[in-house]
Length: 105
Image: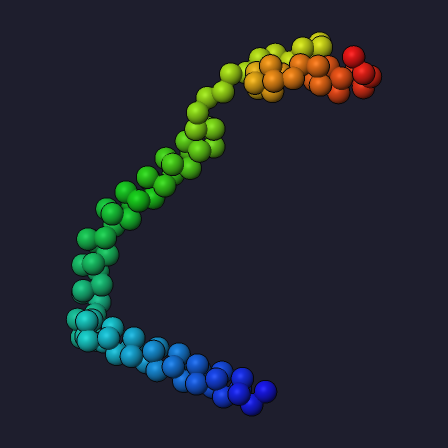
């Protein structure tokens, strides 16, 4: 159990040191005196790319919801006013009618 606790303490020290070094790097790249000006500039530069990526992702999601490729549909036989994929019926029409009536055909 002590071994596990020692390893957890070592890991915590590494995480804390990493966070401190990361903050130090940010201070090097964006000095506190010019930080606001540089961040505004980078925000203006990055905005068109961010908008483009969001629009592209929305288009991809929209096309996936539509099914990607179109499948043939047909009116379900048996008096139901429902549409169903044609390949489901053509694959085994007997099982469709069996489940529709609940009796063996």
